[in-house]
Length: 263
Ligand SMILES: COc1ccc(C[C@H]2SC(=O)NC2=O)c(OC)c1
Ligand SMILES: [Zn+2]
Image (cartoon, rainbow, N blue to C red):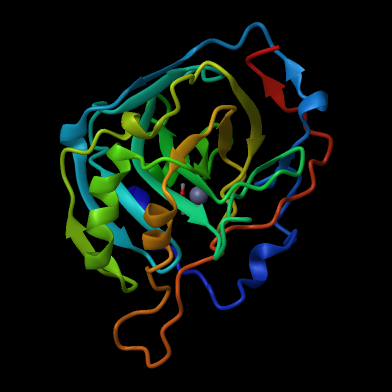
């Protein structure tokens, strides 16, 4: 689907990691969420996710992360409510992780790093007809971020973990169906922080309403180890590089307010 967007990344020491001079780059992501500086907004509504597992299509290695892609040609898997005024269509989810359990997430909470972070990517299908259009508009995308912690095995994640060896190399893809991404959400999705930010990889466009869950999910050490068995490199390349540390460093807040849905 379009949302996979064959964006080309230089994962070799990605030079875009730092606060790159993005045109008017005053709402870049990820950020450190300073809890005591977040502002409770009683107007924030509960999130409403309506995901249909039938829209799950494939899983592939894009040379930076692995993406599970959904059919986003109709409003079958959607997100609304929370800070959002419109209805957003799920197009893909992916993760960011470290080479060790000590780091890996993109967002931090009071500077606390998590071993990994899940991103569920949605685009505004009330206002735009294609993902490519939405990605360029300031209210075009909504990404749900969920922190992962190492603990008990995540049963729902295992189906995805079992598919990873088939997509070890960059640009490999396999069919992946009937996966309900709701199983990756924490029990409590009413408590979240939200702020206006950007894509965390090129083109770094400032089109994302971020919704970062306060509650994390748990995955086992072994499940996370399989993430690290993926490769940045394609099968042809002589030197294979393990896919780890595929996160961007935290960016300046530039006066933005992070709102919370909870006190
Ligand atoms: C051209 O469109 C793009 C480009 C990159 C990404 C992926 C980035 S954005 C995020 O939250 N995490 C990531 O790794 C994207 O995803 C919506 C959409
Ligand atoms: Zn991401």
